[in-house]
Length: 211
Image (tube, rainbow, N blue to C red; front, side):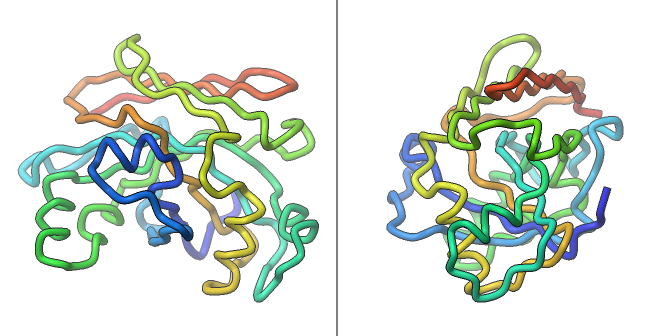
C-alpha cells in the first residue's frame, strides 16, 4: 500500500445522514483531514479510549489517488487520477465531537485520533466498473446498519476531486473518504463489523472487530 500524505474526508455528503445528526445539507463539500497516523488495518481492529465516550462507525467509499492533482478542473483528468477503490471506517468520538461543536472548536480530537481510519483492501479501478453504480453495506453483529449508493451522494466523485484539489494539492497515495449514509451508531467492545462493496463486476467482503 502506498502511504498517503493525508486522508481527506467529506462530511455530510448524504442528505439523510446530515438530517440524522441535525446538520444542514451543505451547498458545497464539507472537508476535514485525518493524518497518516490515524490509519489501522482491518486485522488490527477497532480501538478507542472508551473514557472519552461513544465511538461511532461511519462506513464510506474511499478513493486512492495515483496521480498528483493541483488546481485541476478537468473532470476527465481528476477521474483518471483515481487508481483504486475500497471501503473504510471513519471512526468518530461522538461525545467529544458534540462538545467541540458546542464550543465552536475544530473536530480533530474526535475525528483524527490514532486508529480513527480503517481501510479495507484496495481494488484496482479497472476491476470496479461504473463508479456511479457502487453499493455498500455495513452490518454490526450480523444486523444491517448502513446501506449506501454512490449515486445518492450530494457531490459525486468528480465534483469532490475537482473541489478538493483547488484547496489541497493531492499527492500519489492520498485517500479520499467520500462520506457516509444514514444509520451511524455507537460501537461496543467485541462488536463484529462486516463490510460489503457491490460493484458492476463483483462483490467484495471484509470483516473487523472492536478490540
